[in-house]
Amino acid sequence: MPKTQYTSKKFSGPTLDIIDSANNIIEEYEADGLDLTLRQLYYQFVSRDLLSNTQKSYNRLGRIISDARLAGLVDWGAIKDRGRNLKENQHWENPGQIIRAAARGFQIDHWKGQEFRPEVWIEKEALVGVIGSVCEDLDVSYFACKGYVSQSAMWGAAQRFDKYHNEGQTPVIIHLGDHDPSGIDMTRDILDRQEILRGCYSVERIALNMDQIEDYKPPPNPAKLTDSRCNGYVEKYGSNSWELDALEPRTLRELIKRTVLGFRDDSIYEDVREKEYGYLDILRHIEENWQSL
Image (cartoon, rainbow, N blue to C red):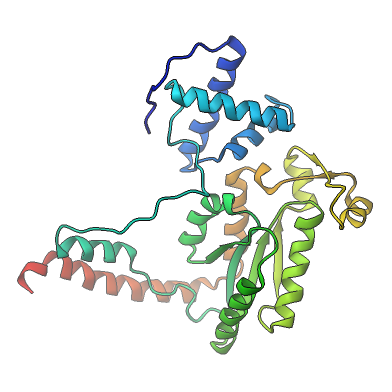
């Protein structure tokens, strides 16, 4: 990925230390095939005691990273803004190229014939880039709730789950959210509204939970006292809350993988994959011989 200098800037010693630490963290995650949002990078600084957990520290890190990118000291592709993406059409030079692309993207339903049909629902859209690759590898649908799920999205999910029921499968929602008054309540809300819509009756919250907070020790934030659910939350968990973003991306991916594989019958899965390999051989033959067809 590129480090391109557009401006010249002198940085103080402490600021250069922050830039060096940012590059070290970025390299760690790139080695695992992961990228980071600015907030995820910030939480890595906090969890390593490199910055205090305050809005002022977050804003300062954002300014430093912005300046360092312009000065050619931080890779432009290393920090992702997952909320702003360009959409464009694809183009091909010949039929062989599109057949090759079709072969790369071809996949039959890996959950065909399985007893369960899991979906992964995550509270924040910014974390879709973290979980997307593991969900796609497992052929599991995933969804950014963006807080409380809209009624339209909830109804659409119930229609999918009705289809799964008709195919003899039990739908399961695997939910990940913040550990704060609203984040905890969102899991309850999903189950309650799905029961009303007669969709999914099984919601498994796999993060962020108190045992994970005790194990991984993510940096805390004060619970939002203005949240109407705060009193019950404080009685049960105390005055701190924790953001899902504070968990390492590798940990989130491993949690999802372990949970999803617990619902999969591997013997059925291998039969489906064998059928898929046969279809891929057909597509490769067409790609190699398209000019003579």
